[in-house]
Length: 477
Image (cartoon, rainbow, N blue to C red):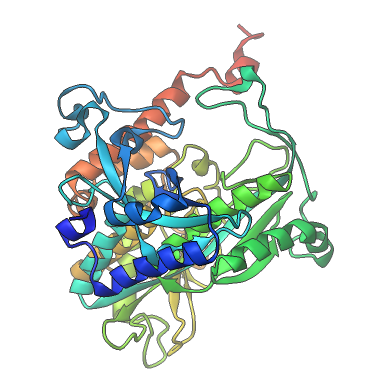
């Protein structure tokens, strides 16, 4: 009996979809199958199997070492895996034991830039059939189940800014290896500061067409491609989807852009603020609304001339109330906090407004508009999409349950008295550590696990002697 059968992990319809994947692999002459898992950082990891092994992988999954779940952003293991319970009280993780990645047949794609390659997103399970509670995708599913229990669906739309450079030197000399290695040397594709001008778009058109063809071939719901304000900075936007599909879109889009760009001599980065002269920060604007289970009606729509419903206002109240803790999910890198600056089209405090780009949460729509939504402008493009969306949903639902009041909209967002957003990742993690709502929603073990991984990154950062320190003190003292 297979792993899937033994634990009842697919119904008849899902088994048929898995069979269809196998038929496509044979009919389309696919040679290899990438089995990808979105890790704690929103990075795809996994294994590649040959087509002849695809049926077994779909039935029984593939083994992966649990240390993959314990690594910081330099791929360094942040836990003592050979101590009792791997240092975190989980016997399943001890000794770098295995867990299983089980492919989701609904996610099957053929990669247009590598047409010999099939691709499947995977779920994480322990050997006894239990979902791995540290899985970001499982955490989003948990949040969606909570919303469903309250009678809601969750719809999101994504706008992702990123930088696109010409790759000059990938830095592959032996001395460039390390954890992490030497970053690549790049050149600009545009000088920037021509916001949305046609001439700048035309300068980028050759590479944008390469990316557009790949994204559309993946059947991702691309809406627009825009030239952003900064040098070599662009933005891609996508149609609204249910949150799980939207998160899957984000994770595949980022990976696809980086792979396709590299194959054509470019370097794409979703790092918020690269250390490039004259650079502008990149953000991730997350549009979100709740729908009524059964009817699909947007429950954020206001009535009798109001833009937002009472449900929307309470959801908004939850986002503002928990904004400092939520930053650990929306802005999970040290670099992302370089973006929170006044008068910069990025927020610096927990306020909301009606169609105001200086606030943290921007309310959009018209009274009775089915597209009424809240746009959270706090995120960085490197955020893990599953955890970003799960945190927004949990904190918004807490606002509904407690009927939290967001207060009046801010017309002057950089002058309005409100809680400041964290100025550093360490500050955000401390706020998350103290947040009882997050611990209840995600689970104590999950929050402690995430805190340790992110604090390991901060410890490495603080141990480095920066260029600023060298310039400031070396000659003076």
